[in-house]
Image (cartoon, rainbow, N blue to C red; front, side):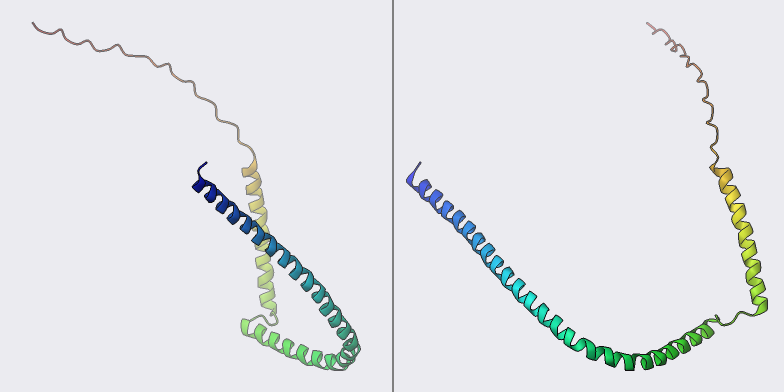
Length: 151
């Protein structure tokens, strides 16, 4: 091996080792950062749980006094909006003649469903396989004779 190729191989090996070293350092840094964040996250979470436990009683007291009033008010608003939407869409109370029409349509739909079921049942029955036709033997025609060449 020549001196130049030996130097090139040495440089290539050092570059390779530097890359591996950079990877190792990145893994070590990431591991340390993860461990640090994990400990801090746990501490922050525990602090928040403690603060929530302190405020839980106060929130429950306020909710008992405020929520029923708000609930009744909002329920009335929602019901009012629903009634207005029903009226706008024509979905209010159904008149007696409309009810009869709806029942008539339902009866006709039931009859159509029964007919469709009968048709589907008839179509679903397997049909017998068609018979194979007998093939006629192929007969070759004799080749046409060429007229004799004139001399």
